[in-house]
Every structure is written in C-alpha cells, then in structure tokens.
Image (tube, rainbow, N blue to C red; front, side, top):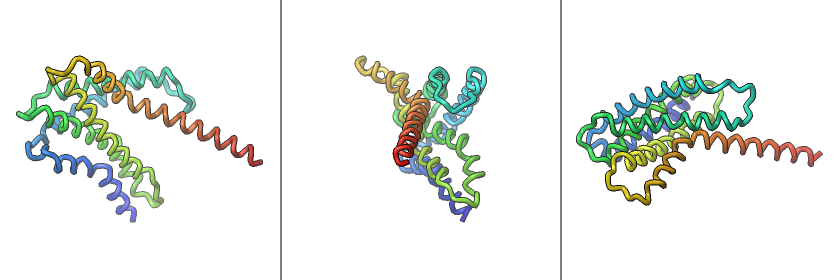
Length: 210
C-alpha cells in the first residue's frame, strides 16, 4: 500500500511533464536536448539563489510575516528571470521555432524544479505507513509550477526573442514577468494572511461559544 501511494504521488508529480512533451510537437521536433540544457541552467540558478538566500536572509525566530524579508526574497526571485534569459538567448539550440523553444525551456525548467524540491521528500515521506495528503498536494503544486514555468518562458520569449513586439504591450509584458517571478513570495504572503485570519476567526468563534 505504501509503494502504491508513492507511485501514485510520483505519477501525479512527474507524469504531466512527460505527457506534455509527448502530446505536443516538442517530441516531433526532438527538443529533449533543449529541455536538458534548461534543466542544467535551472540547477545552476538554484545554487546561486541558495547562496544569496543564505548570505542575505536572516534566520527568523518566529513564523511571522516580515515585509523586508519577503521583499528580499522577491528580489532574489528575479534570479530565475536571469536564468531563463540565459537559457533562452545564450544557449545553442537546434533549428527549432521560438514557439517550441520557450516550451522546451519551460518544460525542462519545471521538471528540474520538481526533481530538486520534491523527489527526495516524496521518496522519504510517501512510503511511510501513515497516509497523508501532503504529497498529493505536492503533486498538484508541481502541475501548477509547470504552467507557471512555461508562462514565464513565454513572457521571456516575447521580451527577448521577438523583434516586432508592439510597443504598447511592452509595459504589460514586463509587469506580468515581474508578477510571475515574484509569485512564490506573493503566494506565501497570501497563505500567511489567510492562515492568520482563519486562526483569529476560530479563536473569536471559540470565545463566542463559551
């Protein structure tokens, strides 16, 4: 039963990446090499982010919301944008169209993120005797991250690869790229606010029922 749960969670986490590659023209144009290169760039980017986080962020004694720390995390999050810029513009690719290039880069980026952040916890935790929903939610998070990575790669393709982009859309493209790059910090802030509000509501409800 434990291995069955592990395989289910693993398929939920990594299966959509394989399905996306097989179901789209990416497999027909043999863009696997581009995805592998993007994955390697992601690993290098993650290492740089880890060094920056360890250097500039202080260890908080509580789990409270710190605006300065969250702002610093958002700024460090733009390292992902720099990594995607390198993957889209500086790496040598096969003769594939821009449409297939950004999809292959986004796919490799998302797959490397899932392997780096979810494979080890999945292997250690999903084989436990006690059932938990955490790893199913982790798989759903990996699916959302796949969409997010391809979206960010698409925005990068519009900004850096397309020469005849409309001038009126340039501010919108950069704003969207900024939002997508800082999405982890935004999500954390929203979750923190939601959990705090829910805790206060439950405390008030408990006091009123006494």
